[in-house]
Amino acid sequence: MTATDDDFRRKMLATAFRMPSFQTMVTRKSSITNAFVNSVIPVIPPTLDEIEEALSILGMDPSNVRCAYCGDKKSEWDHLRPLVLKHRPTGFISEIANLVPSCGKCNQSKGNKPWRTWMQSSKGLSPSARGIADVATRITRLDNYEKWRSPTIIDFEDVLGRDAWEQYWLLWKNVNDELRNCQEVADSIRDKIIEALRSK
Ligand SMILES: [Zn+2]
Image 1 (cartoon, rainbow, N blue to C red):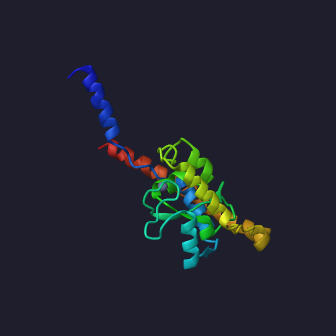
Image 2: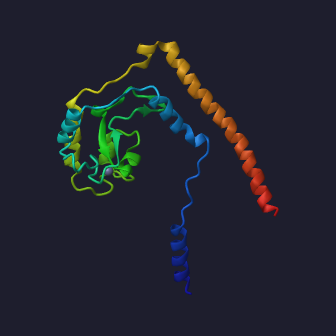
């Protein structure tokens, strides 16, 4: 085997394997925030007429609903304007005026980023980065979709009073603090396990 062959083999093997992403209790922070936000915002189911109108604005037939961002097969309806920013709710809710059909790839890649900037960005799995040909047309349709209705925006402090709202986020802080404590215990357990494996 020549040196180049060996280099090639090493590179191939290194890219052939991928360790599953390492989850700790602390990396759960966004899931916890999402749960705290999703648990208090209203979910308003659309009427059939509203579904029909929404699809027509997006230029889609009900028998063939595709991802509004890239045109792939849709797997879910994604919040056009994010529900969470910087670990706090934005005030937007789950209602059809704030939801568009999406594929899993786009939903994951978009995250909480503003949809237009994300669609035009050349990073990650955004539609532009993936070379989707009709991104401009899709942006125009989504523009029209945004203009269709003004979205509901909740001012939580205004509705509940400042104290009650802060109390809720104190619960969120307590859960995260407790998880950090749990992670410290978990870390020391894992260290002991690794040590035990080494001394075998
Ligand atoms: Zn997509």
